[in-house]
Length: 469
Image (spheres, rainbow, N blue to C red):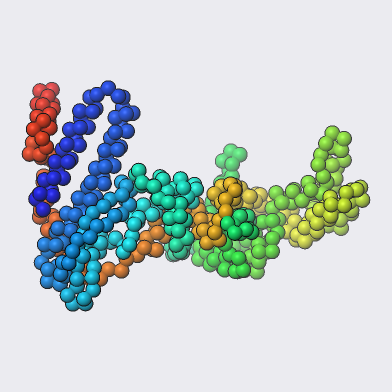
Protein backbone atom coordinates (compact mmCIF):
# COMPACT_ATOMS: atom_id res chain seq x y z
CA UNK A 1 0.00 0.00 0.00
CA UNK A 2 2.86 2.36 0.83
CA UNK A 3 4.24 1.81 -2.67
CA UNK A 4 0.88 2.76 -4.25
CA UNK A 5 0.74 5.99 -2.24
CA UNK A 6 4.35 6.80 -3.06
CA UNK A 7 3.82 6.26 -6.80
CA UNK A 8 0.73 8.44 -6.84
CA UNK A 9 2.45 11.28 -4.98
CA UNK A 10 5.34 11.10 -7.44
CA UNK A 11 2.82 11.56 -10.26
CA UNK A 12 1.08 14.53 -8.58
CA UNK A 13 4.33 16.33 -7.81
CA UNK A 14 5.59 15.79 -11.37
CA UNK A 15 2.33 17.23 -12.69
CA UNK A 16 2.56 20.31 -10.44
CA UNK A 17 6.17 20.97 -11.51
CA UNK A 18 5.26 20.75 -15.21
CA UNK A 19 2.37 23.18 -14.69
CA UNK A 20 4.61 25.71 -13.01
CA UNK A 21 7.24 25.40 -15.73
CA UNK A 22 4.75 25.69 -18.56
CA UNK A 23 3.04 28.72 -17.00
CA UNK A 24 6.29 30.61 -17.44
CA UNK A 25 6.60 29.75 -21.11
CA UNK A 26 5.23 31.96 -23.90
CA UNK A 27 1.88 30.68 -25.15
CA UNK A 28 -0.74 32.83 -23.53
CA UNK A 29 -3.34 32.08 -20.86
CA UNK A 30 -5.62 30.36 -23.37
CA UNK A 31 -2.98 27.77 -24.27
CA UNK A 32 -2.06 27.36 -20.61
CA UNK A 33 -5.67 26.58 -19.62
CA UNK A 34 -6.01 24.16 -22.54
CA UNK A 35 -3.05 22.20 -21.24
CA UNK A 36 -4.35 22.52 -17.70
CA UNK A 37 -7.69 20.99 -18.67
CA UNK A 38 -6.02 18.08 -20.44
CA UNK A 39 -3.71 17.38 -17.51
CA UNK A 40 -6.46 17.72 -14.92
CA UNK A 41 -8.59 15.25 -16.85
CA UNK A 42 -5.68 12.83 -16.96
CA UNK A 43 -5.12 13.42 -13.25
CA UNK A 44 -8.80 12.62 -12.60
CA UNK A 45 -8.44 9.42 -14.59
CA UNK A 46 -5.27 8.45 -12.71
CA UNK A 47 -6.78 9.32 -9.34
CA UNK A 48 -9.88 7.23 -10.05
CA UNK A 49 -7.77 4.24 -11.10
CA UNK A 50 -5.54 4.71 -8.07
CA UNK A 51 -8.56 4.82 -5.73
CA UNK A 52 -9.99 1.63 -7.22
CA UNK A 53 -6.77 -0.35 -6.96
CA UNK A 54 -5.91 1.10 -3.56
CA UNK A 55 -9.35 0.12 -2.23
CA UNK A 56 -8.86 -3.37 -3.69
CA UNK A 57 -5.68 -3.81 -1.68
CA UNK A 58 -7.42 -2.60 1.48
CA UNK A 59 -10.32 -5.04 0.95
CA UNK A 60 -7.87 -7.88 0.29
CA UNK A 61 -6.21 -7.32 3.68
CA UNK A 62 -9.37 -6.79 5.74
CA UNK A 63 -9.92 -9.48 8.37
CA UNK A 64 -13.66 -9.74 7.71
CA UNK A 65 -12.95 -10.49 4.07
CA UNK A 66 -10.48 -13.24 4.89
CA UNK A 67 -12.96 -14.96 7.19
CA UNK A 68 -15.75 -15.21 4.61
CA UNK A 69 -14.37 -14.63 1.10
CA UNK A 70 -11.63 -16.60 -0.59
CA UNK A 71 -9.53 -14.73 -3.18
CA UNK A 72 -9.50 -16.49 -6.55
CA UNK A 73 -7.84 -14.38 -9.26
CA UNK A 74 -7.50 -10.86 -10.63
CA UNK A 75 -9.53 -9.71 -13.64
CA UNK A 76 -9.27 -6.65 -15.88
CA UNK A 77 -12.21 -4.27 -16.03
CA UNK A 78 -12.96 -1.13 -18.04
CA UNK A 79 -15.50 1.58 -17.27
CA UNK A 80 -16.19 4.97 -18.86
CA UNK A 81 -16.00 7.89 -16.46
CA UNK A 82 -16.33 11.62 -17.08
CA UNK A 83 -12.51 11.62 -17.30
CA UNK A 84 -12.57 9.02 -20.07
CA UNK A 85 -12.08 5.27 -20.14
CA UNK A 86 -10.48 3.75 -17.04
CA UNK A 87 -9.02 0.25 -16.92
CA UNK A 88 -8.17 -1.38 -13.60
CA UNK A 89 -7.71 -4.75 -11.96
CA UNK A 90 -9.85 -6.26 -9.23
CA UNK A 91 -10.06 -9.63 -7.54
CA UNK A 92 -12.72 -12.27 -7.92
CA UNK A 93 -13.81 -13.75 -4.58
CA UNK A 94 -15.69 -16.89 -3.53
CA UNK A 95 -18.20 -16.64 -0.68
CA UNK A 96 -17.34 -19.60 1.55
CA UNK A 97 -20.87 -19.77 2.98
CA UNK A 98 -23.00 -19.51 -0.18
CA UNK A 99 -20.43 -20.67 -2.74
CA UNK A 100 -21.28 -17.61 -4.85
CA UNK A 101 -18.64 -15.60 -6.69
CA UNK A 102 -18.46 -11.85 -6.34
CA UNK A 103 -16.26 -8.85 -7.10
CA UNK A 104 -16.05 -7.13 -3.71
CA UNK A 105 -14.54 -3.99 -5.23
CA UNK A 106 -17.57 -3.61 -7.52
CA UNK A 107 -19.85 -3.97 -4.49
CA UNK A 108 -17.74 -1.51 -2.51
CA UNK A 109 -18.03 1.20 -5.18
CA UNK A 110 -21.58 0.21 -6.21
CA UNK A 111 -20.62 -0.61 -9.78
CA UNK A 112 -23.35 -2.68 -11.43
CA UNK A 113 -22.44 -6.01 -13.09
CA UNK A 114 -21.42 -5.58 -16.74
CA UNK A 115 -21.74 -1.81 -16.30
CA UNK A 116 -19.71 0.08 -18.89
CA UNK A 117 -20.88 3.64 -18.23
CA UNK A 118 -20.72 5.05 -14.72
CA UNK A 119 -24.00 6.48 -13.46
CA UNK A 120 -23.02 10.15 -13.80
CA UNK A 121 -21.83 9.51 -17.37
CA UNK A 122 -25.14 7.87 -18.26
CA UNK A 123 -27.04 10.77 -16.66
CA UNK A 124 -25.06 13.30 -18.71
CA UNK A 125 -25.58 11.17 -21.80
CA UNK A 126 -29.37 11.24 -21.36
CA UNK A 127 -29.36 14.98 -20.62
CA UNK A 128 -27.40 15.64 -23.82
CA UNK A 129 -29.48 13.23 -25.93
CA UNK A 130 -32.74 15.06 -25.20
CA UNK A 131 -31.17 18.29 -26.48
CA UNK A 132 -29.15 17.14 -29.49
CA UNK A 133 -28.73 14.11 -31.76
CA UNK A 134 -27.37 10.81 -30.47
CA UNK A 135 -24.03 11.15 -32.24
CA UNK A 136 -23.21 14.54 -30.72
CA UNK A 137 -24.39 13.41 -27.30
CA UNK A 138 -22.09 10.39 -27.44
CA UNK A 139 -19.06 12.63 -28.07
CA UNK A 140 -19.67 15.17 -25.31
CA UNK A 141 -20.10 13.34 -22.00
CA UNK A 142 -16.77 11.58 -21.42
CA UNK A 143 -13.40 13.22 -22.05
CA UNK A 144 -11.87 12.08 -25.36
CA UNK A 145 -14.15 9.04 -25.40
CA UNK A 146 -16.87 8.48 -27.97
CA UNK A 147 -20.02 6.55 -27.09
CA UNK A 148 -21.83 5.02 -30.06
CA UNK A 149 -25.19 6.25 -31.35
CA UNK A 150 -26.65 2.79 -30.75
CA UNK A 151 -25.59 2.89 -27.09
CA UNK A 152 -27.16 6.32 -26.64
CA UNK A 153 -30.42 5.13 -28.23
CA UNK A 154 -30.43 2.03 -26.03
CA UNK A 155 -29.90 4.04 -22.85
CA UNK A 156 -32.92 6.20 -23.71
CA UNK A 157 -35.03 3.12 -24.48
CA UNK A 158 -34.16 1.43 -21.18
CA UNK A 159 -35.51 4.21 -18.99
CA UNK A 160 -38.74 3.88 -17.05
CA UNK A 161 -39.82 7.46 -16.41
CA UNK A 162 -41.97 7.55 -13.32
CA UNK A 163 -41.14 10.32 -10.85
CA UNK A 164 -43.22 10.49 -7.70
CA UNK A 165 -44.78 13.86 -7.03
CA UNK A 166 -43.95 15.48 -3.68
CA UNK A 167 -46.81 15.51 -1.19
CA UNK A 168 -48.65 18.82 -0.79
CA UNK A 169 -49.88 19.46 2.74
CA UNK A 170 -51.45 22.88 2.15
CA UNK A 171 -53.48 22.89 -1.04
CA UNK A 172 -53.54 26.09 -3.06
CA UNK A 173 -56.72 28.14 -3.18
CA UNK A 174 -57.35 29.63 -6.64
CA UNK A 175 -60.44 30.62 -8.63
CA UNK A 176 -59.20 29.42 -12.01
CA UNK A 177 -57.03 26.66 -13.46
CA UNK A 178 -55.94 26.50 -17.09
CA UNK A 179 -55.09 23.36 -19.08
CA UNK A 180 -53.65 23.96 -22.55
CA UNK A 181 -53.29 20.90 -24.77
CA UNK A 182 -51.78 20.01 -28.15
CA UNK A 183 -49.75 17.28 -29.87
CA UNK A 184 -46.68 16.96 -32.09
CA UNK A 185 -46.33 14.76 -35.20
CA UNK A 186 -43.13 12.71 -35.21
CA UNK A 187 -41.95 10.47 -38.05
CA UNK A 188 -41.09 6.87 -37.17
CA UNK A 189 -38.20 4.77 -38.51
CA UNK A 190 -40.50 2.19 -40.08
CA UNK A 191 -42.96 4.68 -41.52
CA UNK A 192 -46.00 6.40 -40.09
CA UNK A 193 -46.13 9.01 -37.37
CA UNK A 194 -46.44 9.10 -33.62
CA UNK A 195 -48.27 11.86 -31.76
CA UNK A 196 -46.82 12.67 -28.35
CA UNK A 197 -49.40 14.63 -26.36
CA UNK A 198 -48.75 17.68 -24.22
CA UNK A 199 -50.83 19.24 -21.46
CA UNK A 200 -49.64 22.27 -19.51
CA UNK A 201 -51.48 23.10 -16.28
CA UNK A 202 -51.10 26.53 -14.64
CA UNK A 203 -53.17 28.86 -12.47
CA UNK A 204 -52.20 32.45 -13.35
CA UNK A 205 -49.97 34.65 -15.51
CA UNK A 206 -47.50 37.49 -15.07
CA UNK A 207 -46.98 40.10 -17.77
CA UNK A 208 -43.35 40.97 -18.45
CA UNK A 209 -43.45 43.59 -21.17
CA UNK A 210 -44.70 41.82 -24.29
CA UNK A 211 -44.02 38.40 -22.78
CA UNK A 212 -46.48 36.43 -20.69
CA UNK A 213 -45.20 34.05 -18.01
CA UNK A 214 -47.36 31.13 -16.92
CA UNK A 215 -47.25 30.69 -13.15
CA UNK A 216 -47.03 27.37 -11.28
CA UNK A 217 -46.68 25.36 -14.49
CA UNK A 218 -46.82 21.58 -14.55
CA UNK A 219 -46.25 19.55 -17.72
CA UNK A 220 -47.82 16.21 -18.65
CA UNK A 221 -47.25 14.24 -21.82
CA UNK A 222 -45.75 11.46 -23.83
CA UNK A 223 -47.16 8.81 -26.15
CA UNK A 224 -50.63 7.76 -24.95
CA UNK A 225 -51.88 5.91 -28.02
CA UNK A 226 -55.12 4.12 -27.14
CA UNK A 227 -54.98 5.17 -23.49
CA UNK A 228 -55.67 8.89 -23.44
CA UNK A 229 -57.74 8.45 -20.26
CA UNK A 230 -54.50 7.62 -18.43
CA UNK A 231 -53.12 11.04 -19.34
CA UNK A 232 -56.16 12.92 -18.12
CA UNK A 233 -56.24 10.83 -14.95
CA UNK A 234 -52.68 11.99 -14.22
CA UNK A 235 -53.77 15.60 -14.75
CA UNK A 236 -56.81 15.20 -12.47
CA UNK A 237 -54.70 13.54 -9.75
CA UNK A 238 -52.21 16.40 -9.83
CA UNK A 239 -54.91 19.08 -9.73
CA UNK A 240 -56.74 17.31 -6.91
CA UNK A 241 -53.53 16.92 -4.88
CA UNK A 242 -52.34 20.49 -5.49
CA UNK A 243 -55.49 22.63 -5.40
CA UNK A 244 -58.59 22.87 -3.20
CA UNK A 245 -61.09 21.84 -5.89
CA UNK A 246 -64.05 23.00 -3.80
CA UNK A 247 -62.76 26.57 -4.10
CA UNK A 248 -61.99 26.39 -7.84
CA UNK A 249 -64.69 28.05 -9.97
CA UNK A 250 -63.58 27.07 -13.48
CA UNK A 251 -61.02 24.83 -15.17
CA UNK A 252 -60.49 26.01 -18.74
CA UNK A 253 -59.38 23.36 -21.24
CA UNK A 254 -57.87 25.10 -24.26
CA UNK A 255 -56.79 23.46 -27.49
CA UNK A 256 -57.56 22.83 -31.14
CA UNK A 257 -60.80 20.95 -30.48
CA UNK A 258 -59.37 17.43 -31.02
CA UNK A 259 -61.39 14.59 -29.54
CA UNK A 260 -58.58 13.56 -27.17
CA UNK A 261 -58.63 17.08 -25.70
CA UNK A 262 -62.40 16.99 -25.27
CA UNK A 263 -61.95 13.76 -23.28
CA UNK A 264 -60.48 15.94 -20.56
CA UNK A 265 -63.90 17.53 -20.04
CA UNK A 266 -65.17 14.14 -18.85
CA UNK A 267 -62.38 13.90 -16.27
CA UNK A 268 -62.01 17.42 -14.92
CA UNK A 269 -64.79 18.89 -12.77
CA UNK A 270 -65.98 22.43 -13.52
CA UNK A 271 -64.18 22.23 -16.86
CA UNK A 272 -65.00 24.53 -19.79
CA UNK A 273 -63.98 23.73 -23.37
CA UNK A 274 -62.30 26.63 -25.23
CA UNK A 275 -61.01 26.69 -28.80
CA UNK A 276 -57.74 28.57 -28.99
CA UNK A 277 -57.61 31.65 -31.22
CA UNK A 278 -54.71 30.38 -33.32
CA UNK A 279 -56.66 27.45 -34.77
CA UNK A 280 -59.82 29.53 -35.11
CA UNK A 281 -57.96 32.23 -37.09
CA UNK A 282 -56.32 29.53 -39.20
CA UNK A 283 -59.75 28.12 -40.11
CA UNK A 284 -61.17 31.55 -40.96
CA UNK A 285 -58.18 32.47 -43.11
CA UNK A 286 -58.58 29.19 -44.96
CA UNK A 287 -62.24 29.93 -45.66
CA UNK A 288 -61.91 33.53 -46.87
CA UNK A 289 -58.83 32.73 -48.99
CA UNK A 290 -55.60 34.59 -49.69
CA UNK A 291 -55.58 38.36 -49.62
CA UNK A 292 -54.28 40.43 -52.57
CA UNK A 293 -54.57 44.00 -53.88
CA UNK A 294 -57.77 43.32 -55.80
CA UNK A 295 -59.75 41.52 -53.07
CA UNK A 296 -58.30 43.03 -49.88
CA UNK A 297 -61.40 45.02 -48.89
CA UNK A 298 -63.72 42.09 -49.68
CA UNK A 299 -61.62 39.63 -47.63
CA UNK A 300 -61.47 41.98 -44.66
CA UNK A 301 -65.25 42.47 -44.79
CA UNK A 302 -65.87 38.70 -44.79
CA UNK A 303 -63.56 38.28 -41.81
CA UNK A 304 -65.30 41.08 -39.92
CA UNK A 305 -68.72 39.50 -40.53
CA UNK A 306 -67.56 36.03 -39.43
CA UNK A 307 -65.94 37.31 -36.23
CA UNK A 308 -69.05 39.37 -35.55
CA UNK A 309 -71.21 36.25 -35.82
CA UNK A 310 -68.96 34.52 -33.26
CA UNK A 311 -69.21 37.47 -30.91
CA UNK A 312 -73.01 37.34 -31.19
CA UNK A 313 -72.91 33.53 -30.80
CA UNK A 314 -74.96 33.28 -34.00
CA UNK A 315 -73.63 30.27 -35.93
CA UNK A 316 -76.57 30.30 -38.33
CA UNK A 317 -75.25 33.63 -39.54
CA UNK A 318 -71.75 32.12 -39.71
CA UNK A 319 -73.04 29.41 -42.07
CA UNK A 320 -74.75 32.00 -44.29
CA UNK A 321 -71.55 34.02 -44.65
CA UNK A 322 -69.49 30.92 -45.48
CA UNK A 323 -72.10 29.68 -48.00
CA UNK A 324 -71.86 33.08 -49.69
CA UNK A 325 -68.10 32.59 -50.00
CA UNK A 326 -68.54 29.00 -51.26
CA UNK A 327 -70.94 30.19 -53.96
CA UNK A 328 -68.14 32.27 -55.44
CA UNK A 329 -65.58 29.47 -55.24
CA UNK A 330 -65.06 27.87 -58.64
CA UNK A 331 -62.43 25.26 -57.75
CA UNK A 332 -63.81 21.93 -56.51
CA UNK A 333 -60.77 21.09 -54.35
CA UNK A 334 -60.75 24.53 -52.73
CA UNK A 335 -64.52 24.34 -52.12
CA UNK A 336 -64.22 20.95 -50.39
CA UNK A 337 -61.38 22.25 -48.23
CA UNK A 338 -63.51 25.26 -47.17
CA UNK A 339 -66.51 23.03 -46.47
CA UNK A 340 -64.30 20.95 -44.21
CA UNK A 341 -63.18 24.07 -42.35
CA UNK A 342 -66.82 25.14 -41.90
CA UNK A 343 -67.56 21.70 -40.45
CA UNK A 344 -64.62 22.15 -38.07
CA UNK A 345 -66.08 25.45 -36.85
CA UNK A 346 -69.58 24.03 -36.39
CA UNK A 347 -68.20 21.00 -34.52
CA UNK A 348 -66.59 23.42 -32.07
CA UNK A 349 -69.49 25.83 -31.61
CA UNK A 350 -69.46 25.44 -27.83
CA UNK A 351 -65.69 25.93 -27.61
CA UNK A 352 -65.87 29.07 -29.82
CA UNK A 353 -68.79 30.42 -27.80
CA UNK A 354 -66.80 29.94 -24.59
CA UNK A 355 -63.87 31.77 -26.14
CA UNK A 356 -66.05 34.88 -26.42
CA UNK A 357 -68.23 34.28 -23.36
CA UNK A 358 -65.26 34.03 -20.96
CA UNK A 359 -62.83 36.29 -22.79
CA UNK A 360 -62.23 38.46 -19.71
CA UNK A 361 -60.81 35.45 -17.82
CA UNK A 362 -58.85 34.11 -20.78
CA UNK A 363 -55.50 35.37 -22.04
CA UNK A 364 -54.82 33.28 -25.13
CA UNK A 365 -53.44 29.81 -25.62
CA UNK A 366 -49.71 29.15 -26.02
CA UNK A 367 -50.03 25.45 -26.87
CA UNK A 368 -48.31 25.82 -30.26
CA UNK A 369 -45.35 27.60 -28.68
CA UNK A 370 -44.98 24.92 -26.02
CA UNK A 371 -45.12 22.15 -28.63
CA UNK A 372 -42.46 23.90 -30.69
CA UNK A 373 -40.12 24.48 -27.74
CA UNK A 374 -40.63 21.26 -25.79
CA UNK A 375 -41.21 18.67 -28.53
CA UNK A 376 -40.60 19.85 -32.09
CA UNK A 377 -37.17 21.36 -31.38
CA UNK A 378 -35.84 17.85 -30.74
CA UNK A 379 -38.36 15.41 -32.20
CA UNK A 380 -39.81 16.74 -35.45
CA UNK A 381 -38.04 19.87 -36.67
CA UNK A 382 -35.41 17.77 -38.50
CA UNK A 383 -35.85 14.82 -40.89
CA UNK A 384 -35.34 12.13 -38.25
CA UNK A 385 -36.86 8.68 -37.84
CA UNK A 386 -37.71 7.55 -34.31
CA UNK A 387 -38.69 4.45 -32.38
CA UNK A 388 -42.02 4.85 -30.56
CA UNK A 389 -40.39 4.05 -27.19
CA UNK A 390 -37.82 6.79 -27.67
CA UNK A 391 -40.42 9.32 -28.81
CA UNK A 392 -42.23 8.60 -25.55
CA UNK A 393 -39.12 8.77 -23.36
CA UNK A 394 -37.51 11.82 -24.97
CA UNK A 395 -40.77 13.78 -24.80
CA UNK A 396 -41.24 12.82 -21.13
CA UNK A 397 -37.62 13.64 -20.27
CA UNK A 398 -37.93 17.08 -21.84
CA UNK A 399 -41.01 17.68 -19.69
CA UNK A 400 -39.13 16.51 -16.59
CA UNK A 401 -36.48 19.10 -17.37
CA UNK A 402 -39.12 21.77 -18.04
CA UNK A 403 -40.50 21.09 -14.55
CA UNK A 404 -36.99 21.60 -13.10
CA UNK A 405 -36.80 18.00 -11.93
CA UNK A 406 -33.59 15.96 -11.81
CA UNK A 407 -33.02 13.47 -14.62
CA UNK A 408 -30.32 11.77 -12.54
CA UNK A 409 -33.09 10.46 -10.26
CA UNK A 410 -34.59 8.55 -13.21
CA UNK A 411 -31.23 7.08 -14.22
CA UNK A 412 -30.43 6.15 -10.62
CA UNK A 413 -33.74 4.34 -10.09
CA UNK A 414 -33.15 2.29 -13.24
CA UNK A 415 -29.69 1.26 -12.03
CA UNK A 416 -30.41 0.46 -8.38
CA UNK A 417 -27.97 -2.13 -7.10
CA UNK A 418 -29.10 -4.68 -4.50
CA UNK A 419 -26.21 -5.11 -2.08
CA UNK A 420 -25.70 -8.19 0.04
CA UNK A 421 -25.47 -7.26 3.71
CA UNK A 422 -21.94 -8.63 4.21
CA UNK A 423 -20.41 -5.85 2.08
CA UNK A 424 -21.38 -3.23 4.67
CA UNK A 425 -19.13 -4.85 7.29
CA UNK A 426 -16.25 -4.97 4.82
CA UNK A 427 -16.91 -1.38 3.75
CA UNK A 428 -16.79 -0.13 7.35
CA UNK A 429 -13.53 -1.95 8.06
CA UNK A 430 -12.00 -0.84 4.75
CA UNK A 431 -12.94 2.79 5.36
CA UNK A 432 -11.27 2.68 8.76
CA UNK A 433 -8.12 1.17 7.25
CA UNK A 434 -8.01 3.89 4.59
CA UNK A 435 -8.27 6.61 7.24
CA UNK A 436 -5.43 5.05 9.19
CA UNK A 437 -3.17 4.60 6.16
CA UNK A 438 -3.48 8.15 4.82
CA UNK A 439 -2.00 10.42 7.45
CA UNK A 440 -0.99 13.58 5.58
CA UNK A 441 -1.59 16.92 7.23
CA UNK A 442 -4.03 18.98 5.20
CA UNK A 443 -1.80 22.09 5.26
CA UNK A 444 1.37 20.41 3.96
CA UNK A 445 2.44 19.13 0.55
CA UNK A 446 5.19 16.49 0.81
CA UNK A 447 6.96 18.01 -2.18
CA UNK A 448 10.44 17.64 -0.78
CA UNK A 449 10.05 13.89 -0.28
CA UNK A 450 8.79 13.00 -3.74
CA UNK A 451 9.67 13.63 -7.37
CA UNK A 452 12.98 13.69 -9.21
CA UNK A 453 16.00 15.66 -8.01
CA UNK A 454 15.26 18.33 -10.63
CA UNK A 455 11.65 18.63 -9.45
CA UNK A 456 12.67 18.90 -5.78
CA UNK A 457 15.18 21.65 -6.65
CA UNK A 458 12.54 23.50 -8.66
CA UNK A 459 10.14 23.46 -5.71
CA UNK A 460 12.90 24.56 -3.34
CA UNK A 461 13.72 27.57 -5.55
CA UNK A 462 10.04 28.62 -5.69
CA UNK A 463 9.67 28.32 -1.91
CA UNK A 464 12.85 30.32 -1.31
CA UNK A 465 11.68 33.02 -3.76
CA UNK A 466 8.32 33.25 -2.00
CA UNK A 467 10.06 33.53 1.39
CA UNK A 468 12.33 36.34 0.12
CA UNK A 469 9.37 38.31 -1.25
